[in-house]
Length: 94
Length: 171
Picture 1: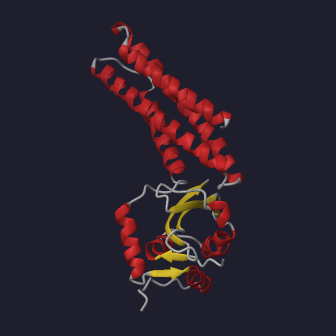
Picture 2: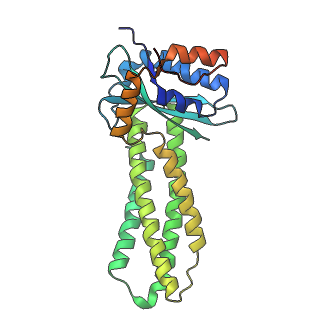
Picture 3: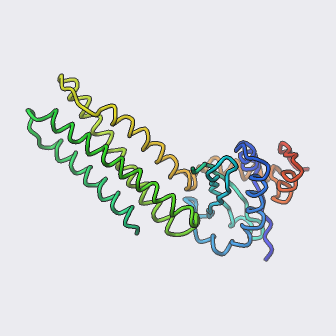
């Protein structure tokens, strides 16, 4: 089944506030676009507090050193073909 | 379970017992000396916390999505919570001793270490999903039904063109 990732408006707004460099942003979005559907089976057992959702982490090398870490929360129960990215958290690990 | 986390969690529990036991039974004449010793215990615990944190991030860098990271991260959160409880208790004891005219060595160090542990704790918590907010979830779904969403292809295409737009509801 081909899964098309959908981003909630609140999530896309949050992504724009992270202050990422263009390359970092493209890498993050690329991981959501390709990595999420490709690794769906591996990630889906990792349920969040709300069991309708699972979560996984994306790590992106930071230009200024260290790593950006994103915690991505995905609702895969509302529509099986459309995983909804409902929430995304961001932090920097030195 | 990882030894480095077990060691830290065990030490945090031991510090908690030490403080609680002392609160239940102590010699009033020895308050200043005893509280200074408890402050030292906190400073030692903070050093172990920093060491454990460093080991944890090494593990994290290898594979941020491994079950080991989830398990170690959850144990780390429990240990950090316990550590902060111990610090809070000892700070209260320092304040009480000070109000009785005792000068407690190392109390500034206690505060500095506590601030650092708060930062470590915030960082470890940040790799886990935020607490579930039912209202926020309902609003997000309602926004989706109003057409306020974007597909990942659209967002990626905007980012590649260097032109990230504000979200507009779909028709």
